[in-house]
Amino acid sequence: MKFTTALRSSSVRWAGPAVLLLAALYYMTGETAPPSQYHHWAPAIVSAPLMTLYALAYAAAAGLGVWESGRLRKAHIWESLPSRSRYRVAANILLPVVIPSWVVLLLPPAISLARSGTAPTLDSLRLPLMGMLVVVCHAIAGFALGSVLPRLIAAPVVAVVDWIAVAFTRATDPYWLRHVSGQFSDIGFGEVPRLVSLAAPVLLAGGVAVGLLLLWLPLGPRVLRGVLALGVAAAGVLGAQHLARDWPHDPPMATGQAPMDCSGVHPRVCVPRVASGNLDRAQREASRTLSTLQAAGAPVAAPDQITDIYNGPAAAGPGDRVWRMNLMTADRPHEVGYQVMVRALKFRCAEVPLVRARSVWLWGATRTGQVDMYQERRRNEGVTPETRQIESQVSDQVRDVLDRSQAAQRTWIRSNLDSCSKSATGSTT
Amino acid sequence: MKLTARAAMTAGTAAVIALVLAPTAEANWSSSISAASVSFESRRWSDELYSQIKFTGCHTDGSKSTDIQMWRDISLQPDDSYDNKTFTACFNGGTSNGEWTELGSGMKNVYFQIMKIGGSTFGPQLSVNSVSVDTTKADG
Image (tube, rainbow over all chains, first blue to last red; front, side, top):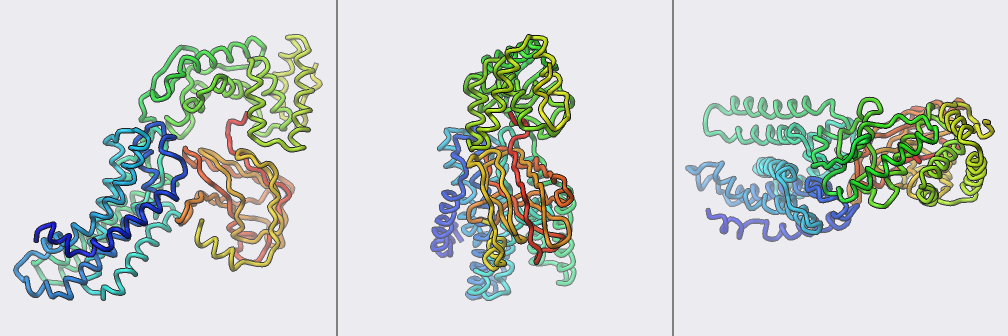
């Protein structure tokens, strides 16, 4: 049967628009940030709309697979075409079935890429391609169920159960359930899902689908085919579980994949190329802030390199030689310098009284000419009577400290960074 | 919205739950919890990469522990769950501190939910004198 003939007679003609309408609804309501905020990182732009669409794509394929299979059974196609390959008949019928689901996985990411003016990359195709493979597997599973269940009841039930089974893995423990479901969360800048992350859901869905296909083999006794099918399906499920059983919330990701540009030495500052317009200014701010604090007597161990927090390994680097901070979105003057100041004034203790911490930061901001940035941070945190009172104490203390000699300020900043007492050491002389 | 949590809330107890919101900012905020039952959800806040939740002054009519889970709110879908942490120190005069470092980049609409009180998913209620949320590891 020609593809166009199969398409004309398929349930896709009436179900396809409904599926695409649902996809549009998810696309519009599920958007947490405009695609332009992903800094032209194509894999992240693609992953964002897909996050809520995998379950819909799989459920649609499974439900329509049930329906089409039931339609064949009702028309006695298998009996009337005994010489034709069951696989070929099924493929002819299922190709139109998977197309709406493939469109669900391809069109929304394409729209997001177009909206952000970003070209797709090979890496950005990993998630849609994984989803398209899993769609085929769900369609095959639906087709198999439709060959034994009444389609009028089974098609909607299978679609709903499939959606629930996939979508709710995200809210379920243990984590490996979500990693084998074929559903991914959105990914960050510089990240690319590793192939093993994509292999887990394909292995599970593929194992089940291939197992079902083996049942239709025109060879061997039925029992043997059943045992073989069960073995392949079990191997797929267990293999996927084995792969993903120890993964944390996020599956394995390659990080730091975005190209970087670097500038300067001591510190060498590196930012993703898409944000390198402010690189030289960021390096100057970092260098000036560190040297000013050192000259003011703060015990600052300058890093060898400062790099962007979003484009690197999730775990912090060893020691204090590489600082990772938010450079990419720091596009205004002093945003980098202020972060460097806060990082440089390192408290010895994990818990520091609020007034002391802010006194140290305000002192550092004043010495490095970044008071406006300190005040902006406080405003962003919200202004209440309590915060006004805290800021009044902080201002009084810092004003007093700044009136002292250079040596007294050096003693003050060192004692405040070193002390673990609950009260601020504002009276140090 | 997490469908199971919403259903549980709808059919939930008649406890008076008051979350007294302090600052209206998106970043760090503090608050308190009064007589909350299991499945209580905090306010939502916008966050990325990291969140720290601190409870001080916990009181309950059950055993002295509570399980807190971080969630990401997803429209029209089950919410995304993160690690579950058990708080006990806040029942003994200390501060319970939970850090979630796997939130990923990109601003996410997150909240915490009380999953258990005293090891039970039904019955006891929890009050917390001070709840504080710190959304930036670097501070400043």
